[in-house]
Image (cartoon, rainbow, N blue to C red):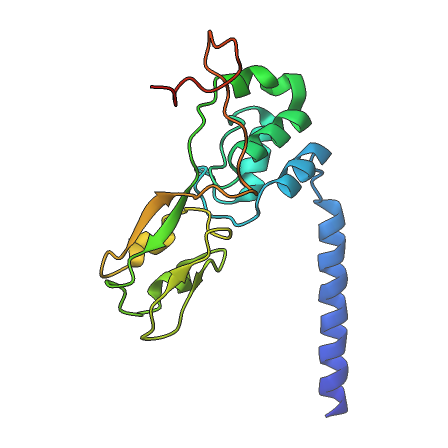
Length: 190
């Protein structure tokens, strides 16, 4: 019994040292800007940007092979933060001027069609859907990133996308139209 414990301990320590040495020998340094960009990204790894996770998206941004608005869940605020970090190498403010301002989409569940199958909230990467088995589910719009994961698995097609409602947290002043001297919005005057 003692010989088995001693041999397993020796084997564990030996393999641990071997793994530690291999980790130091084959360590690859990443640029610090990648870590800074990854900290700014939402971290949900939803894949809407076309990369397998937020780390891969951050690496693509650091290389300059991805646009500043690659993350739909982050929206306009994230693109502005990325422009501050990446500066002139990403085009700075010039890229943001050409960026179309689209409303962020969130999931919406029609309660009369929901059967409470729980497939949607099992797939939600941000736990934005609440409900129980055989109960009506609902979406917390502040937590939803609009990733389509719940829409794909809903058997009754009770989930759709809607623009995120404007609240004090996500509202910003609209850009004035060209030629408007008063600074007001001429779209409302009829």
